[in-house]
Length: 176
Ligand code: ZN
Image 1 (tube, rainbow, N blue to C red):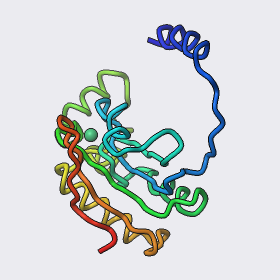
Image 2 (cartoon, rainbow, N blue to C red):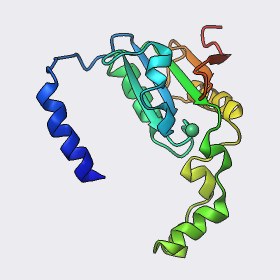
Image 3 (cartoon, rainbow, N blue to C red):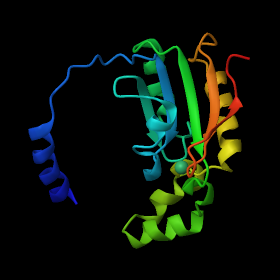
């Protein structure tokens, strides 16, 4: 796959007219969303976000539990001028069905030491598994709002994107 990507890139730069954009997001918004491959080239379009508009933070299950996403959100607010945060979950999230037994046996199969796996308190939580798409967005918004390093001056919204239709549903309007 790497060779295919490098080959493509050679052609890409030939036709691409370079543009200089600011690293500060034009729309002053940070979006925490999932790494799901179906969101690539889809979520920004569905939200009207263009190149240079927003800081997009992605991880498995758009969660801050056991992840460093909270640092990126803090950076977006205090260093990059974001004035609003959107947590955007999506339907059919693979992280809502993560199975600890399967994950552990795959790790063992691929040469990870059992004691290193057992050192992790909660494997499913560590890997970003979520209780359910909507519940996870509610939990994540709460966790960000209650984090001691996140100011209450920045609204934290919670939304769910339908992975098939692209429709957005507001679960929490952070302005309320
Ligand atoms: Zn997902």
